[in-house]
Amino acid sequence: MRFSARWLTLYGLILLGLSLAAVYLDWFIWLALLFAYLGHEALIVYSRYREESRAPIHVHPHRGLKILAVIPRSPAAKMGLRAGDVIVKVNGMPVRQRQALYEALSRNKAFCRLEVINPDGEVKFAQSSVYEHDHHQLGIVLAPDEEVPYYIERQDISQDISLIRLMGMPFKRNAQLTRTVGEEQEHA
Image 1: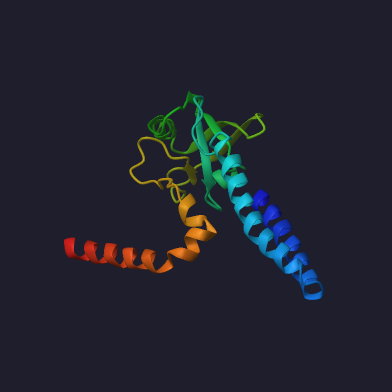
Image 2 (image 1 turned 30 degrees about the horizontal axis):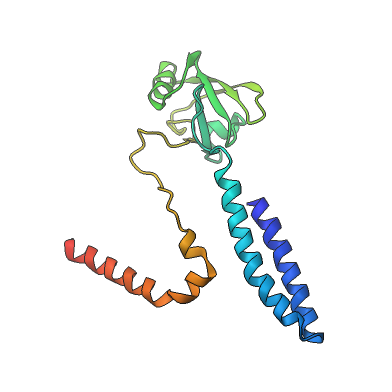
């Protein structure tokens, strides 16, 4: 997000400069128009290339379970766990699957000791007492795996992002959406 924000800010500042110059010199209008379109499309292409050339961030490594998020004021938050950490052992048991995590947590319901690898590759140990009112999974949200019944599926929306596509088909998309909602109501 920081990467996109920086480039969009730079794009916006350059476009603003070209637009202000167009107030005084008429030929800058064409330069601003050309930059608005080509700069936008170049940002999309470069962002897509950059995203697809990197490894996914939130998938479980072969060695443990990756934390996607930590619930505030939970035992995990009190232990200092953060998104991106990888849980390697729980109460002395190696964990590579969700079920192994639950089994290890149930071994000692009053106390939890974790071996965790942070995103920098450093091993740290975290421990905490677990009380009856605490979150049953320590307050961590794990990255999804094959066993998760619900997930967000990635769709290729590159056609919808293009300015040409957006300007040419706004009414058609709304009609398709209305038809889809109507069809779902008929089947219900």
